[in-house]
Image 1: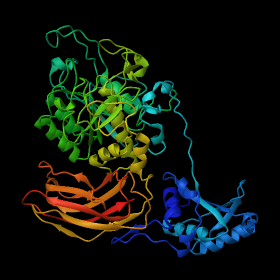
Image 2: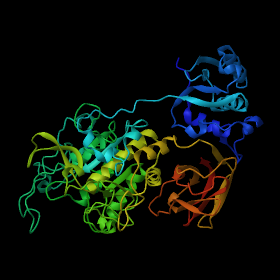
Image 3: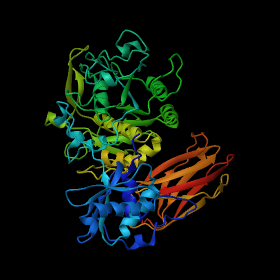
Image 4: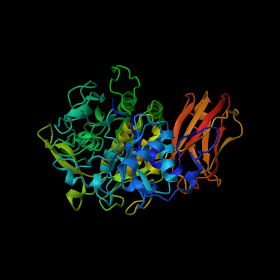
Length: 598
């Protein structure tokens, strides 16, 4: 049987703090032995790794120590130190550097490893002790056009996607692409699952019929004047297929492009045809994609955890569209939308202005807002969208078709638009959900914003939290960026109906420096109408972080979730508080417990 592997993140945290554990009733983690307090400063803590497996320690002894040259002495030392953990540890071999490789045994817990580490740290003959990290190849995908996908990897305005692939690739996640449907493409077909054609109007559909189970894209070409006065003739866009390729094109197949979440599945839902698509069809597609029921449409067997809508129109979000989005989010589906391509305030466009969505602005290759992209306070995040007006290769390359009207041969092409930016975020959301299946839509949005990096360029009017960083975000939600020290309050606190806010404290001590950029705030609240609740995290200096706002449409029970907060500007030690207020009448609740994980 394969041995139990200890997380390198846990081992690294033990090197820093002496022991990593869950701390109940507001009691901070203590060191395993007093001697750990006087341990020599080590290289190990500065080399804390992502959460990857480790089953050995590398121990360097100081010159002159018997263990530095004698394998027998190193073995005896390992055995002696292992006794503290109740395990039969042993010297495995001598490294070329002279360090000793020490086997951790079969069933050590994190606490046991902490004890062993503390023993080594307390030994004046030990120069350093670090985990024997398990590394993986970080090969560039072998897709033939990958080098042209600057949006994934370039240092200036790329989304740093390759750094996320060592943690997640989208496995187990379905993304619904609500768009023009799907035209067959061999670089995408293996990742396409059943969808639906929601276009009810046969004139818009262009395929000779109304709604049916076939989401194939027949082409959305138009004749001059067909869509209104002054309308020029257009060729087919194959828009949905381009969007889908960005999210989940098959990767490492020696062909074409790489998808961001290349092991995710795409469910194509057809709502856009000739001249566009109606809100009514889009609303039904949102509902069905997220597992809701639509009259006359069979139950969805490929329920999506992420929806991408690279579409939109003028006017603010309607109540009808907002209601469908709210219901989808309440079912656990993250909704990603394009901000729009009018170089205007996104607040005046839908679904960009809807609540409970991730609204995405587009950046060019230099990292500045693309000339066409909408902007404003409703924008949540920016992602590569490309600019092809001067150089075609500065666009976003993805799967397409050569047909000017009906389908012809498969190909690849550069497009630009917030339609291209949104699937970058939908792909990232799929990676996050694959890395941590318990994430809620609110947590996904929060983590994407929290872990974004500053725009490399400029954005007049506002492009949200910055440029999305896939590697940092996926690492954060997978637990790889935190040491894992948890402080918990289990003291139940009643939440008065339509009353003043109540606060539950947790005192954090024994840490150094500031809180992490992805502080995990776990909340367990019993409540009969959670839409009444406003929840804030209060830092030791009194700064507040809104975790949840009141919502009159959120009628579900209870709040049992984990929020991600960028608390990197706050000192870790001190008294943190969870503030909860019920803002409406008739429903009551209790804060059962909450916790902070650093």
